[in-house]
Amino acid sequence: MAVVDCAADAAGSLELKLLGATVRDDGYTTSNQSGSGRGIRRPQALLTAALLALEGAVVMVPIAARAAPADLPTATNCTARLLPGLGGRGSNAIAASSSGLVVGIADTSNGGSAPVLWQNGQPTALSIPLEVPVPASVNKDGVVVGTGYDASQEMLVGWWWQNGQYHPLDAGPGNVAMPSAISDSGVVAGVLVANEDHADGPGADEDEHPAVWSSVTAAPRELTLPAGARGGHPFAIGRDGTIGGVAIGDGGMAVLWAPDGTPKVLPDLAGHGGIVLAIDPTGQALGQSAVSEGTHAVAWGAAGPVTDLGAAAAGPASSAQGGAAGIAVGVGSTPSVRASRPQAVMWIGKSARVLPPGSDGQFTGVSGAATSVTGAGAATTVVGYSAAANGLRRATEWSCR
Image 1 (cartoon, rainbow, N blue to C red):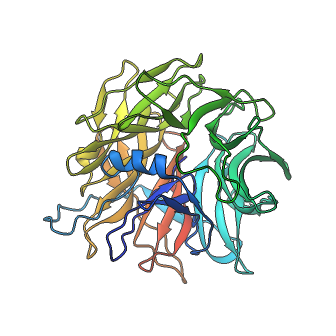
Image 2 (cartoon, rainbow, N blue to C red):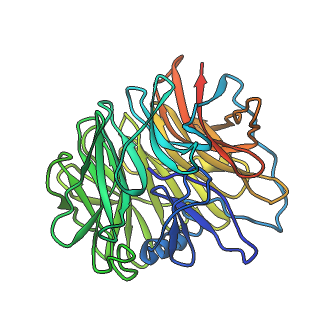
């Protein structure tokens, strides 16, 4: 799933966190999941333009000249714990499985970074023979999917990992595979892009075609696009095989694909588009919808109506990134000197609370984001990251009781 961050340089450029990379409004991406500042760059103009068309998309939009709303109350029943890393300074928890496995990326003691799988809070580095391998999702059986860069062939490669073994994901002839999510039953969702520019990865003018793999060893099958769409990107898979994401036409449309591949466009809040980023265990879709002042976290019921969760969050932008029964988690903007600082947020119904950032003797969190939630009731676990004032991130697990 997608990871959210907030940044703006002197020229006001926005940075969108997507699939483990920072998608900038100049049409390029830079991998920087753990905050180390290293990475590769590649064209991604089509999806960037579509997300920007959502008036903020997966981003906390800096609003410098706006009165600051009141901060959200803190979730006092949730305790933050920083997850151990791989010997370096930064880390980031990207996704969690229903069995409690957590996947992310962490800086190493030699100055690099590596994908990491946390089990019972203990990290294991994943050996992936690619440059900048970024995990996207993990299922209950410990199957991890992600994307990396093969320098020998000068191309992106989708991959899967299990029990210490790396495998490339089948992309079909002439394509690059970019997986986004894997279900507990082993179904993978992601995109295929024609590999016409090996030096930079997918060509800047190429459409992204939503696809599904019935298993990690199966060939991909393209999903049907809604009328008027020329591309799309899935981000989530439900328990019944429903896939959620965005379809790209003149703008972006939140879409659910039924298990048979039939697309359904979902309503949005203000006619500016939306995106599905998660599907909770009950089948409820979660994500965000563009509004006049930014983006609001939303939920879509089984019958299709959209509920504005973000109206309860402080600041002009919020996004729901994960969900459990009756609970959504994600990110919301909070007033600060920079006008917008992301905070990890939990919604119970329409009531929003900030998850307290994690800290220890060497790190003090002041902001963050939540990406996944598992469990319910007295045993709810949320994962994401806490960020220090200098932007350094640490993978974080919140236990809520």
